[in-house]
Length: 396
Image (cartoon, rainbow, N blue to C red; front, side, top):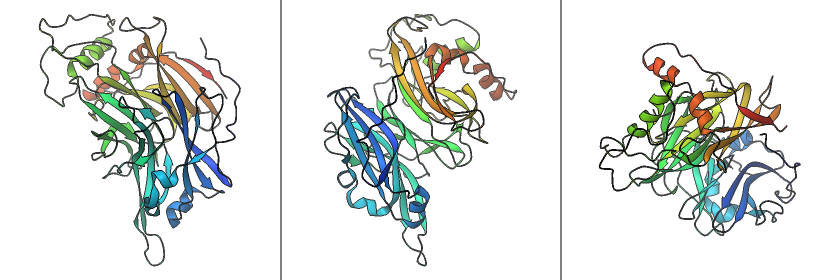
């Protein structure tokens, strides 16, 4: 069934005087029941490009909060001095997400962000060089105090989103997927919950159009409790789980809980790994054909599937959400059905004509990602995409 939407309400408190509000990034604290809406404000009509060229930063970091599920909102809080402090003199400008933030099991709140760092302040009287870098704002006291982490160090990265990734050996990493002008997405990992990121890697399975485009990532627990048949070296992709599931799909088989049987001596500990879904225009030439990709082991840049295109035509920014439906429809593992919502810009002539909302289940994803095409490409053959229907509703 289609979703039901309330009428739009303007958050009149989400602004600073003489500034315009941009790049919304909601974040929910499950420990306190507080809903945060982070955003930036920019003085007057100053464009981002002007700040990048001149180094004159007129951007502020702000948030409003709600304790009644969004019915009412606090006044805007300017967090710039607390969260950034004197470091802002080295930032030509900065922005958030856009999209959503996340909360870790520890309670840490994380807001994805990026900054144009001033690498060389003056060269013959003009700003010489700025470089975009993704990073996080984070709080360990439920939003009372905020700090920023270190930049992804090596590659140019911009708009980004985060996923907390559990791995089957019990380890956890913070995964960042970022926009890049390099023709492909960039991913980076943090092993200290976002304070420091290791060097970024190009993800050549996830293409960018010219100048890049925003994309979204969402994590969710793998639908199978499965112990690999053979021991796996630490850091290796989740071959047992992924290949059993995907190869069965590729051969047209059904997904049956409990097949194949677990080995007689299962490992003493198993943590359901995190899978990641990613949404983005699928063309390297233009912002067209919104699609979703799946990774069953996101630390491996080669783990991403080919896309399932959910909208054919002009499309641009998107944001994903994950849900467990309270019924058994399209359930894979016998538990709640895993479902996703995708909010995205699209249109017939331009990506910016309307905002659409699509809902689909993990079952839909697994039955629509072109696995045969992926295997054919590896064998040197030509890819052929499968098309399936989807459930969606246009909201504007």
